Length: 383
Image 1 (cartoon, rainbow, N blue to C red):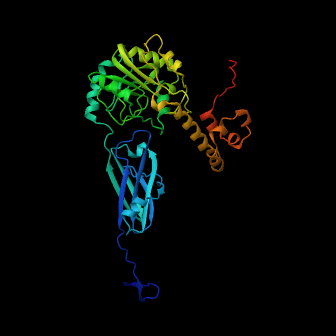
Image 2 (cartoon, rainbow, N blue to C red):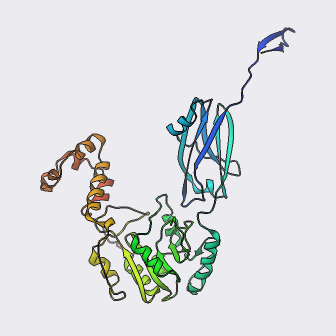
Image 3 (cartoon, rainbow, N blue to C red):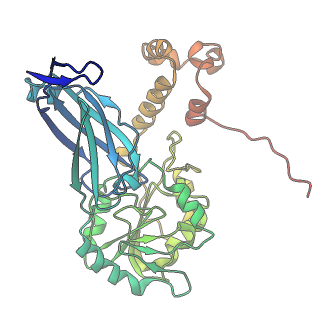
């Protein structure tokens, strides 16, 4: 196609080629997120199939501000679905929660210089009718001498002095664990009463009789506070769960006393802690414990009826975790050599292994993660 263009300098007209753009055909899919952010960051991922190059994918706020471009990644599954499209790419990246906290997420993607926008409403991560009903049941259990601000999603019982620690705990490493069979039996046994999950993390399953207590405001959190100063009255819970939590608190003895205090006489306790596990922080990891150490935390307040090792805590998990993290901490060439070692090679006298490359070149952060022991050297202030 041609069009006439008048040249003001010569007074003549000439025919020039006219560029005609055909509409860009695109297909877009958003895998995540589907619900409001569960932590300080949220994963945004999906794919774009287009007949023109994919320029960028960004998240957009209602005020028009945009995130940095999300990393583009291969998506062979999407490419197989759209063989007629010459440009197919996935995108996957984490953005701050504020980009998806207004009840929806907006993703702007550009293909061949043409922008398109996809909006998705984000549902609450829990049933709000169920949560509201539970919050009404929790209200009479709270201590009148502690601050308790009711929000739409939880009771905020943090004092101003505790809030900085809570903000520091809001990291991308989100604690998510399913209940094991013992916990489920306990929850079912007390179906008609409220039980406390002290340090619940982010629970995918929101149960009507479990009070999710946390220092981080996850969607499932019912009460916000610290374990060393529980905001509940004495003897109000028929059972308390403390599952892989006490290693992450600054004062596990204070937490144990508080758990004992809020248990009803005759109430049930189910607690678990790591012993031979590497460092893992949410965001901090202070204390591992022997079985005697765990029992000692509750000595005098709780009668220990049983103590055992779950299948998920058997020694083989420690061996696997330690060796796999050791391997992952090494440079690729050494990691391959380390993986090829036999058990008998690692059972030699450690003093005779100290000069091995896989010992000398282990990074400092991995040494802290897997250390048999650590030391400190300090000095008391002179004033």
